[in-house]
Amino acid sequence: MIGYLQGRVFESTPERILLDVGGVGYEVHIPLSTYTEIKRRAGEVPIGLYVYTHLREGALELFGFYTAREKLLFEKLIAVGGIGPKLGRVILSGMAAEDLLASLAAGDLVRLSTIPGVGKKTAERMVLELKDKIRELAADLPERPAASPSDDLVLALVNLGYKANEAERAVAKARQGAPDAGFEELLRASLKVLSRA
Image (spheres, rainbow, N blue to C red):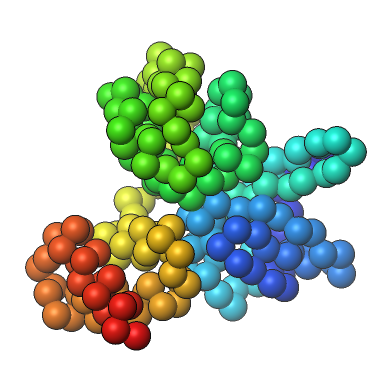
């Protein structure tokens, strides 16, 4: 079982990367948070990923995470009935880890259901199976610096289908026009910038 890979990013998209490890290319599925971190560190070599190896119907799939904490949360998610590795990756792409934990602790089905691919029944199962484990789950997740509001805005725009570099430019332009604006106002302003592009 592959647990960690370190190498050079040969190709990358918000959903997968091709990692060159000693001349061998590993295709690794990644959440958006890992993609953002890889892009932020563009040019750094090598890049290391914590890997979850999934064997399905004779096919081997690799799911990579920039931090051990992301991998741990992913493993907890896929232990929930009805959530496979692909949906687990989508969930981690759709909501930051802290927000996900807060939503699970509060039993916030409405917020959980906003994640693409997560309907009301899946949200209910997540709350039912993980709510009592939240303290343990939060304790298991090492601390990390909070994401900046700009990172959250870029993540939201990429989730809406925009390319990361377009989203970053739009957020920067929106922030220039309203430096003290809140998240929702900046998101609307960024969308206006993108609609004019």
